[in-house]
Amino acid sequence: MKNTTLLVSALFFLLLQTNDSFCQTYARNGMVSSSSKIASEVGIDILKKGGNAIDASVATAFALAVTHPAAGNIGGGGFLVFMDSTGTATTIDFREKAPLKASPKMFLDKTGNLTQGKNLYGEESTTNHIGAKSVGVPGTVAGLYMAHQKYGTLPWEDLVQPAIDIAENGFPLTWSLFQAATFFDSNSPIVFLKDYFKKDNGELIQFGELWKQPELAHTLTAIRDHGHDGFYKGDVAKEIVRFMKENEGIISMEDLNRYTAVERKPIKGAFKDYDIYSMPPPSSGGVALIEMMNLMELAVLDSIPFNSTAYVHLVAEVMRRAFADRAEYLGDTDFNVNTPIAKLTSKEFAKKRFENIDMSRASVSDSTKFGQLYDGSSTTHFSVADASGNAVSLTYTLEHSYGSGMGSTKLGFIFNNEMGDFNPKPGYTTTSGLIGTDPNLIQPEKRMLSSMTPTIVAKDGKPFLIVGSPGGRTIINTVFQTVLNVLAYNMPVDKAIEAMKIHHQWFPDGILYEKGLLSPDTAKALEKMGHMMVPIDGLGELMGIQIDADNKIMIGASDSSSPDGAAIGY
Image 1 (cartoon, helix red, strand yellow):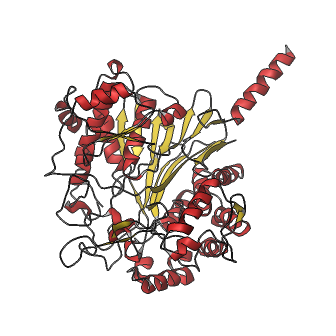
Image 2: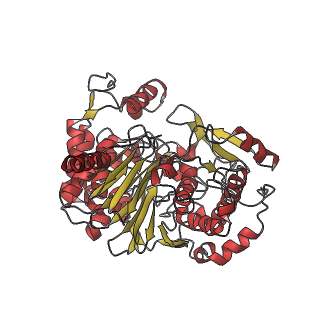
Image 3: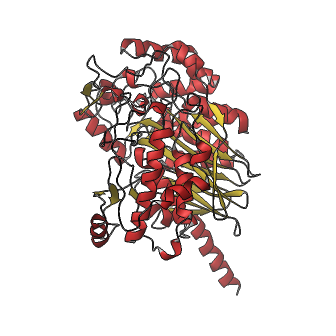
């Protein structure tokens, strides 16, 4: 009997330490799920040292700036949702801002058309995503510093130091980073990006070799020693401004000095017995998520099998309505004070939207009305939970993968190209997805609209599900479907992340779906209903944590589509 007990205990211990085929991890004391195993381990080390979820998030975020340069960043911005052990939720908005010299028509030529140029991939693109003018005032350092000052427990220096150590000592270049390095070496017209993964002798760093970033380590050291001011004042700020002037950018010292993160009240909704907390504008994610969950609550889901024709049709129609509302109403509420958030997230409004869904036929997106703005794909998300019951859901971005591709060789990080998230041409909306509605037009110091949707779902007043995703324009819908899968279809977090997902964004009027996960017969049936079906390889790269309060277990999941990601627990 004693041996049997020992065997069962040993097997249970292994279960707690091992990932299954869906990249799922079990733990009791803390969990970090991010797009970089190294960064997740940094966060766990902070938890082991007595830090809380905010401390671990700050350390993880800075580590990602070293190990996940496509999106982990100090040259961009994002959003953080925090729920403490009492069930109190708040958010921190550290979205980038338009520089003081920005204007609504800054990317138009004399004829009123968007100008063109070569992007970091060597492709033709509009200039709102190209060059130093496309760079918004970065917010990441300000946001992380505010989170620490308000809610952290360990010394700031202890949270930045691990990232400095990784940058100075190097880490083995992963296969995905090596693939990016070889591509940029051959294809990118941007010198900084071509040289980004090279040694001092000009040779490309090979897969498995140590990649050291001394310039980034130096910048991080200034941030470690001086906090917020280490980035927005002093030598780092002076070098940012020098770089901008030299490259026709418009960010000034005044822009950097004036930048502040903002703590905001979260968007809150309810689905059955769960409370959902997410980001308010300038993120559109929270409003759209709650609106869509309200719509789905009105459906009789017990009679709609997951992945069926009726299911995909209903979800697409729900997305269509929420994204049309997004385009019409949402922007930076510091500039658009009459944004009807309460209406858009109300149960009564959902009933009106739900009434005109025809379950036998696709609706038509009206090209004379509204469409969808979208972030680029260079976004990353991580989720954190600690033993005391605190939880963090954090998403941040550079906009496109590797942002603008531009950076100062003295600073070692890549600048965002977030100015492309504003409506670039006032009053001009097309069926291809170009939007010109007023709420998201460029204005000095305005924050551009975002799709980022870091979310915490609470059960009985405590964190239950912590989730978010990159994916640009698809972020809202991948998070929405993951939350729906858990709350409505009772899927565990790993299965909810891996399950088939679709995306509809009002304009263009079509359903993107993950090929291989939707049956050909279902796709044909949806086409007969009037949907344009567009197969793609995958949607999102979700990082989630589910908390089983009854068994006191944290279940972490890293999307299998994330090549370097991992959920790490202890």
